[in-house]
Length: 305
Image (cartoon, rainbow, N blue to C red; front, side, top):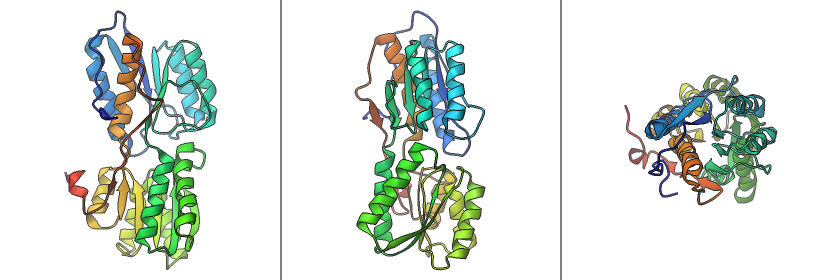
């Protein structure tokens, strides 16, 4: 969308107080700009008789075990609209329950492929991101070598979309590249660090890491501490400071973005416009930008603090 991250509320104040719940996570630095986006939406809607609350479930995973309870609580607390991650198919009954109670729901960041009654989604096309990473990897390795694959959670559909997009495309474009193993990092940098060290110990000729989710800078730290920067490649996601610093040092080959500020900001604004003005978003899937950043174009996207 041309107005990604800057979509504005309609010029109409709500006749009654409105509450919008934005249910997100804070388990790694990726969520900092997402939260900032939600807070910006709250500031923009404050004078329009609308309150936006950033809510973190009791748990640090994307799964319905935690987000389902948070949606239930939002229904009980009479929120007028809900923004939520839809990490797996188990979230569908909770989304549908809210909608059937007259509460519109938007999803963001990751969404299940299981049909549900959500109004719209804001986030990246994660399968295509995986495909693009595979093509980049094949080029970086000249279509040969060994790759270790790190994901956040096998149970989170969005992470799986990236992982499968990478695996399936890599098999097509560079079948000589071997994936030596696949592990869950739980989106944590310290876990990813130890796993990366183990991969490099077990595979002295390892060519690269593909990191599909959070905690990727832990992989970069392991590469740096092993004195393998530039020898073992790293392709991952997100424009967080830790990763961008590693790109600047040549530790991370490149990273793919997904518009986190917009993911936190835009759903709340669009739900307000829907509630107050009946404005339906122009599409069911509002995809965020996904630029590939390397050392060559880093200055366009990041400045060292």
